[in-house]
Amino acid sequence: MASIYQPAEDSYLMSRILKEQLPELLNKNPDLRFLEIGAGSGIHLQTASRLGVKKENIFSSDINKNSVNHCNLLGFNCIYSDLFENIEGKFDLIIFNPPYLPQDSNEPEDSSLATTGGVKGNEIILRFLNDAKFHLEKNGKIFLITSSLSEDINFQDLGYVEKELGCEKLFFERLCIWELKII
Ligand SMILES: C[S@@+](CC[C@H](N)C(=O)[O-])C[C@H]1O[C@@H](n2cnc3c(N)ncnc32)[C@H](O)[C@@H]1O
Image (cartoon, rainbow, N blue to C red; front, side):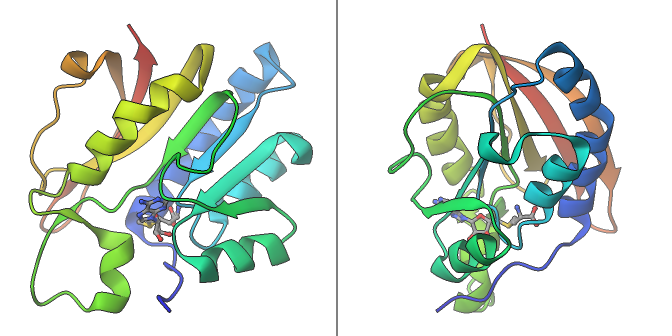
């Protein structure tokens, strides 16, 4: 079975944005319903909990059963699901640090589940965006990471309006977090 993705630069960028954005969102809505797709090590579930999202309002999933078991052991509601396949209900905030790299035959199978987004790199993100809009509350938001290494996405063509929340320049790529709302 695949190993659990250990927090890296993309995870830390998402943590920073959650710390910047969640307090104000919680101020407006203390009952904010939070969903993370692809929870991995559970780093963002712990951040959301520490920042004040009620434990019963934190939901998560992963396609890696090791991650699901790990997040359950941390005390979080985490289910096995390919994107939204097994997810019911609507959420005020959905976050996803997706596999976003283009396919690379040298990438070990064990890690590619967490890192490879398809031939162009953006295929999993496109599938995610097609379904996410059906799981957003009115005025709900998505925080999504993209990489300069994968093909660009036209969010408006997919029915979203975007705002850049923060970027990180790494040695060989640029990562950005987008806030997306339904148009
Ligand atoms: C880049 S890792 C991010 C992990 C963690 N959220 C973080 O920021 O450190 C991507 C995660 O998405 C999961 N994943 C990949 N494809 C998925 C899918 N189709 N549905 C749900 N989760 C998926 C992987 O197993 C992995 O845990």
